[in-house]
Length: 445
Image 1 (cartoon, rainbow, N blue to C red):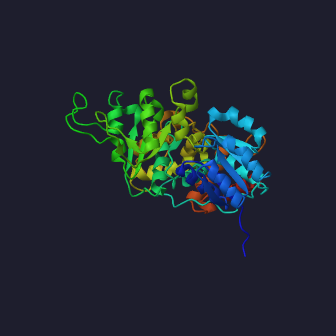
Image 2: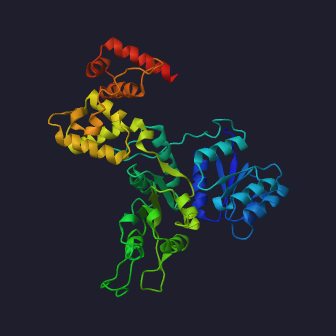
Image 3: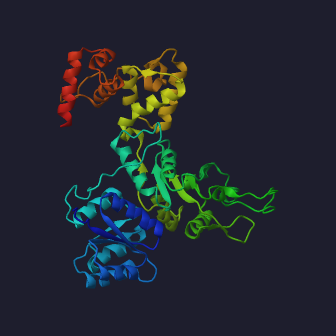
């Protein structure tokens, strides 16, 4: 008979936040209990003390800080982790003296949360991973070969089933909208609409009407009523890109819509119920914008419960060639392969424009390529100029360079593991290839 897993009590007044954190805790192989108030949490602890409590600071009635002494009276050794907004950080640190074992500031970093849970429950370094954190089926062509992108996808899988708003951060062109599409596809709202809007591309004079709709005659030119993006996304997901560009005077209205599930069209005094899950994205540092008074802190913390950051392409080199091959297949309309020299160029280039820049480079190469092989000269000049620039096969310590290692493994994968064919494509002998593969294996140990 399997041993019962430790139970973690999650205390938060918002059901979507409990669902979100609960899904992550369950992905660690642990059991979950929920409470929507400090009073309900105390009752739960009286009935059957959990192994640990995740306690939000801001609660209706008794706050999380006020609940701490009461929890200590009921269960003196019960580990309590405070979940706090940055604005409450000083209060949370002071609460450590009142009995909290640790605290995490929002947005919660899942790796940090996992480490704290494992430490508090004495599960050891990998003990909290009692259950494999699997991800749903990825859509065709979705690339996440790199560990960095894999972590993003795992987080998306945790976030998707919840109705909580999601904030996706990352550099321009890194793939934030693709991640938003993934969250929608994996959510219970997948059969509903996914409506996308770019806040930076909407005229400031019309953005309120575009988001919340307007009545006929609400302003000059409003000859017909408009439902707006929120109502268009009813039953589905609204993706707002460049949320940092949302005018400050409209941010309270967006916050009210998130908290109440109602919007008020321009020209109307009657709120309209709407059921749309918000996923927002930004390439700006919103925490800095909050500090400078350009973005409301309450909206920021409402959006950003769990950290979801899409890394730049330079931080996920394992994704470069799979993405390049995917784009080549998309633009060429037939089988096209990358020459070893072109592979070297792609792996050496610093992708300041991220996935968008790579896509444009491959589109250009497919237009200029007359055969079925992409050569360096088909790539943009600044990328093609890197051909041969990293000709040194090893580093100064005698180890294989990252570029050569990636080129060898990519070519071997392209040749389906056939070393003879891979050696021929790389322009080296089979024996030399075997020697290099042994070096790669030794380095990875």
